[in-house]
Length: 269
Image 1: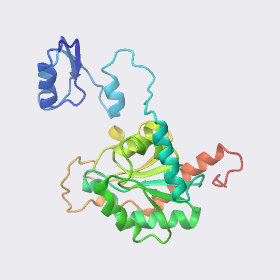
Image 2 (image 1 turned 90 degrees about the vertical axis):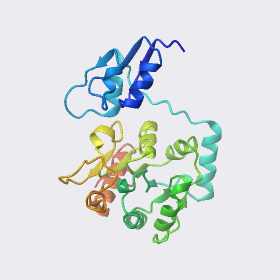
Image 3 (image 1 turned 45 degrees about the vertical axis):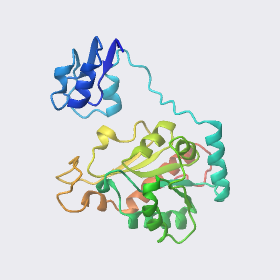
Image 4 (image 1 turned 120 degrees about the vertical axis):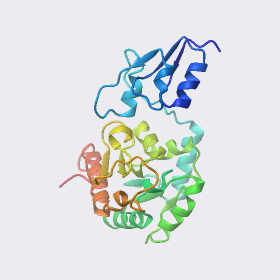
């Protein structure tokens, strides 16, 4: 293809060799990339010591990086779908409206379903919140398990949103409560605040990008382990997160939003 430049952001052997065989004159990657990937680069970016968020790290490959903006544009038809979904579930103009993403690709990155159910019941009882559960078709069993222990009717969008419809739906909620996952990054990109629950992964590297989010993570000697199999047999780092901690984080974000509307119902007393 006669590329001028190839940039390897993944930094693994397979991505490095693809960069090399691209034929690009300039092959850019990180000097501390893994699996011998740097041997394929002729322009090596030196990464400072310490914890650097992945977004900021990637932007180091660009000279004079611009102000960051994530252009997740919402098409009219997707916005209309989201509006219809909310109206069908009696949630249009409902406040507070909270989305819940209970899944993640790694099982051990998931907060227990029972904890999500308890959280939802508390948010409904204390805040009269509207609740939407989101996720892919594969997450339907998790959504059904959570819903079976919820005392009030909630909206289930699990399996109903495409990659384009999900941002449209998340743009309508006050905030998203989520495990470390793709929907977490989508919400952050469109400006929806996130309460992110982290266990085996490192929020300093891959947490919700930007300001206004709350990350909940419990200290353990083994975390962040970044490993799928858990040496404890079950993800204690996720199970240790208390429902009350998450509920308080939700209230903190709502109080912050309410201050923007004088006399709002969730303003801190």
